[in-house]
Amino acid sequence: MDLIYLRDLRIETVIGIFDWEREIKQTVVIDLEMGADIRRAAETDAIEDTLDYKSVAKRIISFVGESSFQLVETLSDRIARIIVTEFDVPYVKVVVNKQGAVRGSRDVGVIIERRTEDYASA
Image (cartoon, rainbow, N blue to C red; front, side, top):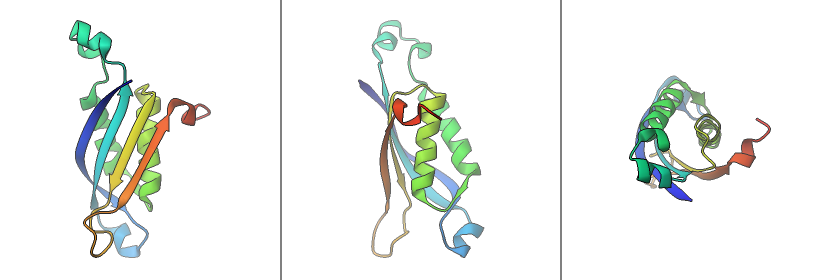
């Protein structure tokens, strides 16, 4: 399996458990690794034969920007679900980073990996 990746996607969203966090937008930083077979695209040099990462980015930016979650765990799972189910991606690794969430730490976040079978009944 080949991987198509997107790194350092910065999106403003409402995220957090504290009252003050529910009233402001904070930046989350998202990294994605998406499984794909890119051999056909390499042969044809056609965007139709690969995962269009610009379309993925636009969808995730729209979703995250309009969302309001308490936990980065929930946000990361919803991102994974969108990528797997809407873009027919068999594997995705999602990193959601909430910088400044813990004093003394540069960043904190979650890393999840999901496959098609994780959302088979969805």
